Length: 89
Image 1: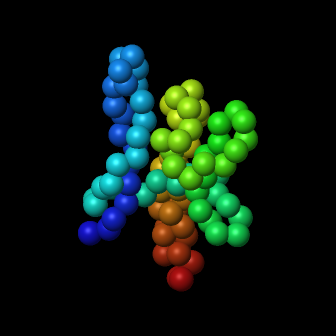
Image 2: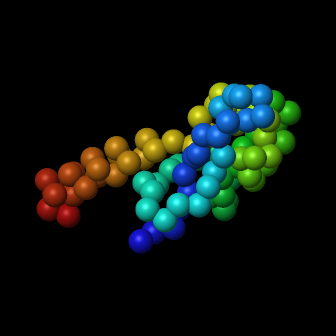
Image 3: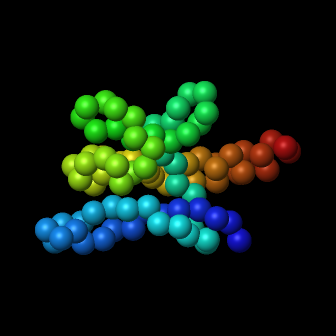
């Protein structure tokens, strides 16, 4: 079993959707949109451009209207596995 996180949609006090990261032991992997070049640590920014290292530290607009995390890498990993089989790797 792997340790990971997932995006959870919660209702905010204003009855709006609000994304939060929660621990998950059996989730598909997620990739952040932005990473530090030297450390590969994910980071997030509001309109002020200041790096934040926790999704909950950025404002509602960016947290919910900007794809901070996604699972697009899964498609690439599947294609890579197929490529390895086809090329005897």
